[in-house]
Amino acid sequence: MHFLIPLLIAIFLPLSALAEGPSTITADAFLLVEMDSLTVLAGKDYHRQLPPASTTKVLTSIVALERLREGDVIVPTQKVLALPNSKLNLVPGRSYRAMDLVTGALVKSGNDAAFALSEAIGGSEERFAEMMNQKAREIGAEHSNFRNASGLSAPGQYTSCWDLALILRYALDNPRFREIIQTKYFLFNNGQRDVKYRNHNRLLFCFEPSVGGKTGFTRASMHTYVGAFEKDGRVYILSMLKSRNLWGDAVNILKYVYNDVPTDREIHLARASAVTLASYKTRKPATKLSSKKAKKRHAVLSAKKHGKGNATLTSKKAKKRPYAGKVSPKKNLAKTIKKGSSRIR
Image (cartoon, rainbow, N blue to C red; front, side, top):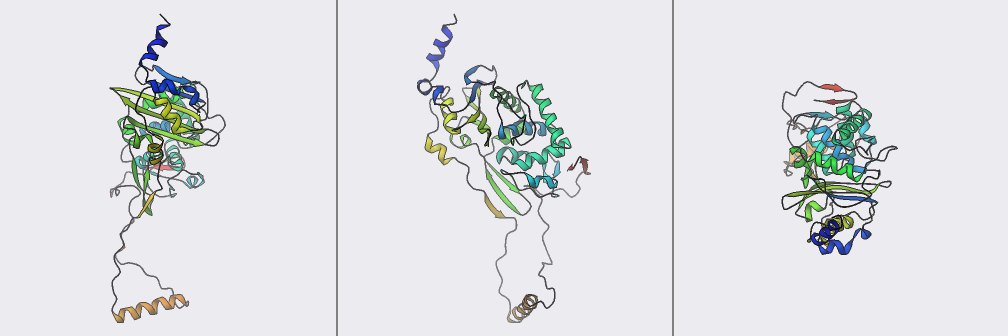
């Protein structure tokens, strides 16, 4: 009977997948699995422990979502300034909607967003990492160990393709997580301007079966990825670690399930574009001053230029600084709850 299994797989797999074969895949480890049954369709060294990079943020986000309420506000500490790119450029001491930070961690892959969440929820990033590892064990991801919330390289931080698939499988049961991971564009107010971010997951833009996914990259980890795809009422999860050709590998592995996959050109056009900046205030068109007012204004500015007085120009009807996020805060926020060095409100 055992000889029938490879024969049936060969019959039902798309010919294109058989033609490509695993030899064309650059990833050190990969896995393609059917989500409900965990049937492995393709894979290589998928229990091997390797650096996860920003795929870590899938676990970070689900741990956060299970502890946050929709209206929670987080105030980052000075420590966020030390986080390297990719980031949202959070301002210490400013209030941000917690859900915006979760979205920024998944869509923009903001390291500072992930760190701010970890400090606010865990009291420290180290304590939050313990919470992440506890959740991983509950899920069944026993070949992983997380040391931080962002996925930045750290000694003793590792995962496997199998564990990444289990973590995403669990996270997809959370409606809020599923909604965020499907977000193509994210408008974020960093306190000075609105910034429009485009999701790093290119397959979300050029491959209709894509449910969503999370990319990652560091020099140590190379390219990493975990994502979900639908076909005929089933969901398939693809995970990769240490890939040298992320999207090429993804497309070749997806050929085990799909006949029609994105072309190189479609993948290229779907790359994340530069952020779009827009001022948070709409500038009013300049009004023409009367001759008398113009002379008076010129005199004030000249005095300032030559050190005569401390003239400043302020609006009598200055607008209130907008809330950090997409909506304005309510007048009566909940009492601040201090947790460690960050605050959740």
